[in-house]
Image 1: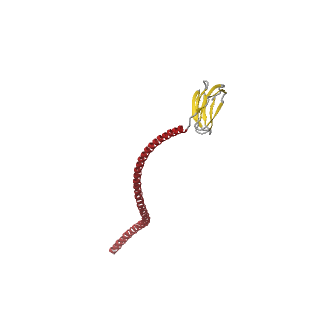
Image 2: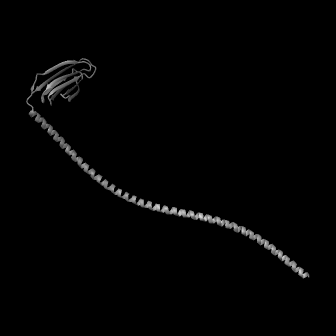
Length: 240
């Protein structure tokens, strides 16, 4: 009887121990389940992040692909531009060579023009000489008139004009005295064109030949405010 009770007690103790171990195992199992749940959540989160990362990588791959295409296009454009640049450089070299040749041609032409201009000037001088000689040959002998003498005095800023009627190729020779003071003196033809401007003179000789018929005019004037400047004009007309 005692032995049976001891066995029962031993079995009860074993059951209690087993129940304690079972409770511990259950707690451990709950803890593991909790960890497993957390791990599952982390795996879900990781899976979502992995999915997002995959999408990001796909987007980056597409971007890289587009960039590669753009880079290829840019390389092709750069190659085209380089070809154009090379062609332009060749054209520039050719243009520079042509410009150098043109400069030499221009220099040569300039020399020719200068030589031609000198020849033209010489021809003009010869022609002028020939025309003068021809004029002399065509002009009949001239007969001098009696000398004309005019005397008087100037007021301040006064101008005096002396008209002379001439035929073509008739001549006038004379002299002007201003009594020691400055006078301005010039000659005009019938059209009003200047035959000669003597500027400011005190005394001067003058001579001219009529190129066209009509009234030639001698002008002389007192250029300042000085009053009563005496003058003497003497001239001879050589008529046909």
